[in-house]
View 1 (cartoon, helix red, strand yellow):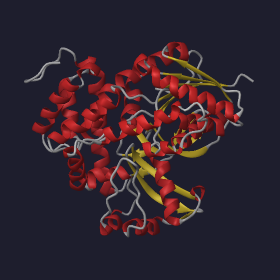
View 2: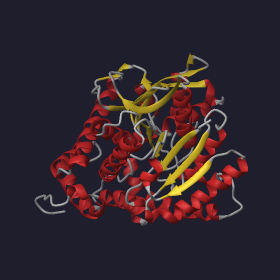
View 3: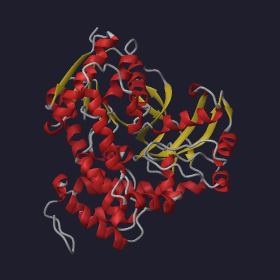
View 4: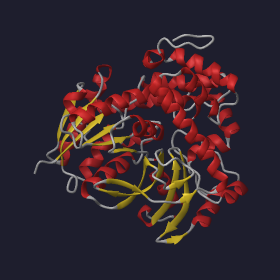
Length: 445
């Protein structure tokens, strides 16, 4: 049996042991013979540390999976069956700037939302599109599974500006939300089904089922009463206003706090900012501790401390998707794909995050029609932001970038948008070659 070849770009990530664990767990149905971990020269040390741990994990499991390490992307991609991307252009130092600069202007600084999300996309999309060009040449039949943030915005860019059609964006958030509902109801997660629809980090649970019986109101009552938190590691767990949750009538995701609890979220970030601590600095320390663990030659499992990194359920999301495509399982998973009319009011050729039937030919989105009126406008506004941001990332058009910044609902004014844009373009200029030579009224890049 030939077996499967998977290439993971960004293989030196601290998340990689999650992926390796998931592949080992599924080896009987997903016979991965080659796993290529790829990184850039600057990330070579971490790649070697993670790769050594991956080899120990595979040896302990006793599965015939070869682990290859390389900084030559094209060497790795040849004849791949699946390509996963988990890159961070500019490393965590760039993330710290994404968080700190907006906070100077009294605006939320966050990795995937607002100005920070815009600049992560501006840095990341050109690199992902380069990877797509390599895939087209070297493994045109491979599936691209993108886990890099902002996953929905990157999927939007790939669908619009790349010839690759076998592309899926992935996030662990819907799985985390389902697991949290299971905790609230004190049942196993496999008894829970949620109808998800929206955008990445802007997804809603429209209906919630326990053993096929709808329990949406029951779950919302539990959330409104503060029975259990519904957040992730990197988002403060502020209590939802009880009457608001009941009025909304559907399940919000943790990232909706940035839009519905903007003042509380900003105040909390400003406290950390004044203490000279942002989430990026917290993650840098966590990564340092994780890699010290990974160096241990006796460690041959994924350490439980990785869940503090916010990557819980990553292996379930990534490996379940690959497993279902490979085995034509026709199960239902929540992924980022071309809308194709599944959500009314969103362009058919745009990316959405939605429940799909997963087949050997890829995900097939399950139509939900119109989103509820109270959330439809917010989703459409974020989609307008994503489309404009993707165009700016590809063209290097200063004015498109300014427009994307200004129409994001977390940015208070066009003047603030311009000030932040100019400062962030300067701060990240080493990772934004598409903006070289373009000028604003006050700055050049």
